[in-house]
Length: 562
Image (cartoon, rainbow, N blue to C red):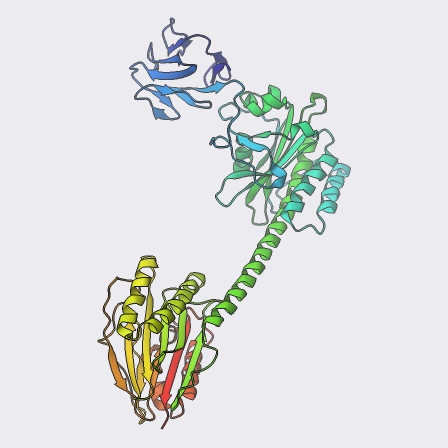
């Protein structure tokens, strides 16, 4: 394969300089192999040398330096296909004849979608343009004026509209658009639709060739596409092979393309979402100005259909996502107790409401081998799917640790180590463990960073208890020793364990429900634990007055019956 340089600018712009030989000196001196007659260029500026079948370039100590891909040379550089060489203000591009970019080369973006197989975008920057016709495109009414004959325009729009009627899937819209264009423009040999992906890259989404042998690889000029998307102008080149803009485009040379039309796809928000392009190989049937006007009209219809398809696809994904969330919600509910524990002499109440479909708050009742009952209330940092997954882990790990170790302090120690080893640094869990011994009416409490429980005495006075015994949340630090607190419930006394989604619930003014309101609700109500729990939630909801719930809410109350 022979190699050559293409002058990108200057008086010899577009000229090919084949590298036949071993050494080529670039400079201003008449003896140089490649003479650059610019005052800022040194007499002997740079040198290209053949080495083992490849070419390397090096600067010859020039005054203004030699640049490859806009990086100044500090030593020899092995040239690759597509490298740009700049000597002062004069630029060249290094080419290898017959070179085809591999899928990993940055000059091409691989196609996306089943209808774009074999399409690759290639760079061909650097030449001046001799575009024959342009049209600015906008989705706003009155922004485009068509001069094509009414029959041509009407037939084109009716054809596309008919093809797209009732079509909502992107995989159906895109081929129908190209099929419609091929019916309108019988001289078209190839067509494709390019759209922006989520990362802002231009990706071929669908291609069509009139002849099967053209479908193996369709090479698309990135320069044309970028120009159309940036300027919002549809362009027509009536004779691409003779157009200086395309002189260095391998895609034009390989396929002997004669005429190209390219139009932007503009959505209802007046944003360019892609382009539609068709070309022909037949010089006798090249596109005309009125054809470009029709393509612009078709492009506007196509953009509307594509946007509808995108919205439809997004709606389908959202429905699927909501279905998955509902299933996850049902699974999460399965982790929570379905009934109150049966403990003689005690009454229980609980409340749980996730801020989203799934949440990170947690409560559980665990019957232990020694006849005691563990009441757990936890709060995973954050809410949503990630928090719900951690909640599921907490449920399983807590049951295992408490069932396998009779000492609740040791059980909490091992539970914390399990979370510290497997939890990301920015995640943690607050957890209150209350173990009720119905024989002695004693409650053993361990608090890992959770809100202090509220104790309500029989006379209605209430207080937050064991604040000094609160340790770090689970997962913060390994080998954490948690303090143990104990209290004996008297007849008529109640204990409420809750998450901060209740006391920190906000109204429209940004004020929090707060501990003062919550404790007043507990103190003023003289009913049973289930009635008081319901009253707390009703008071909280009334305070929020319809404001959104930003955090999960969870509460467990227990009462020693008189």
